Image 1 (cartoon, protein in one colour):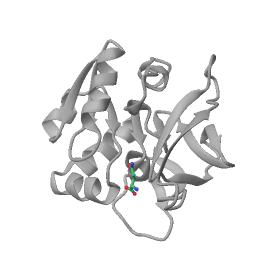
Image 2 (cartoon, helix red, strand yellow; image 1 turned 45 degrees about the vertical axis):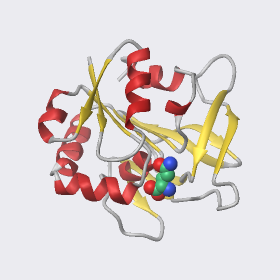
Image 3 (cartoon, protein in one colour; image 1 turned 90 degrees about the vertical axis):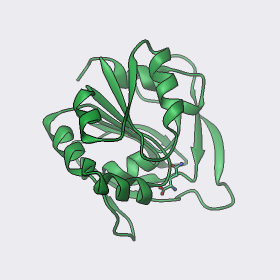
Image 4 (cartoon, protein in one colour; image 1 turned 180 degrees about the vertical axis):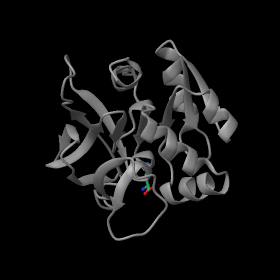
Length: 188
Ligand code: GLN
């Protein structure tokens, strides 16, 4: 299985490293041709407006939307989550509308720009997950088909709707492979 990482901007290398450590081949996705080779896709953290604009310039937005609708497993972290959402509060920006959530950007305030917390993730056994948040968004509202997987301070920070998985935090910045393993396991 080849796992694509959308490589327009953001934390690309860290995801490729996690994919490798999970035992799969990671490939950079910069063009539609690259996307064709991928069986699954990770959209990394970074700056969602920049990634969105570049995706549109390369025609990748429409292809990602098409693949997502056809059932391709796609995992969006942080900015990636914003791009996959149906709605972003207070701003019109390019989105792929693949998961029925409303997100708010930079939702944890300026004073706490970046932080790390022990997170309890639904269905994960063992110790809590050390979640790294960087100017993170949160999920303000979910549709009926969305399963909430984790909350922090009463805010939803991880969720899934069928083949689409999203997290506010950055699992690629820890040593813990569980979130990537969850995404790369075959229960779709
Ligand atoms: N605040 C960024 C955005 O809105 C997301 C931050 C991140 O991906 N670490 O795109």
